[in-house]
Length: 193
Image 1 (cartoon, rainbow, N blue to C red):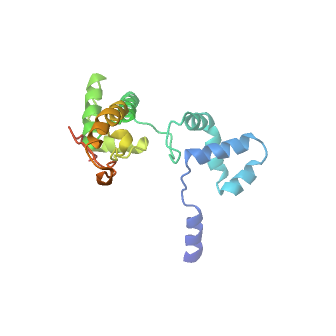
Image 2: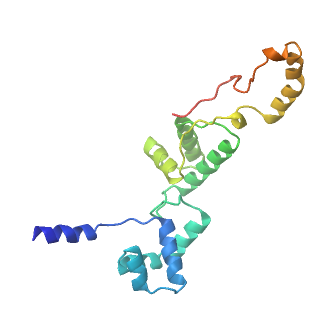
Image 3: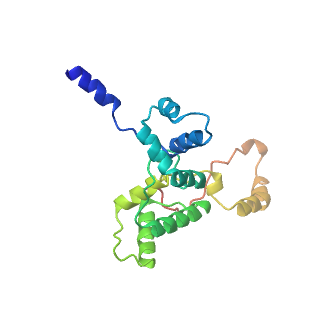
């Protein structure tokens, strides 16, 4: 009796589907190429699960088409403080576009500052909210590295054109080596935390 019980409970385990997969299932249903029963069989879902996807059709398709969430996101639930979330993400994207390194504490401070500016008196900034923010938007605190993030291109081109040529004239060619890996570190920015 116990053997049949364990086999039946394993098939009834709750499954979580990504929004991307839910949208795919909805689109297949909308094309009318397969019946509900065939779709349920193909994706190993119950008819109740399919009905839930179809009931939430508009919200799922809208979220996927707008790229509102990461592709592997499973739920549509958003944060209670959507305005703060949106403002902090916009600030983060703008800072990253300028190759500005942003550490966890910097993100935390900016979030607290924005919450105050938005008048969110009942909001308490904590590490958990920041961690969920980073997870919601697929943000990893990584170092910004490479030549593109190291110096302004105009300054580098100008220096290579004028000053480097003057310096190289003072040496024999046999004494000149590749200097691509050399760097100047003035006002070193914070790295990830």
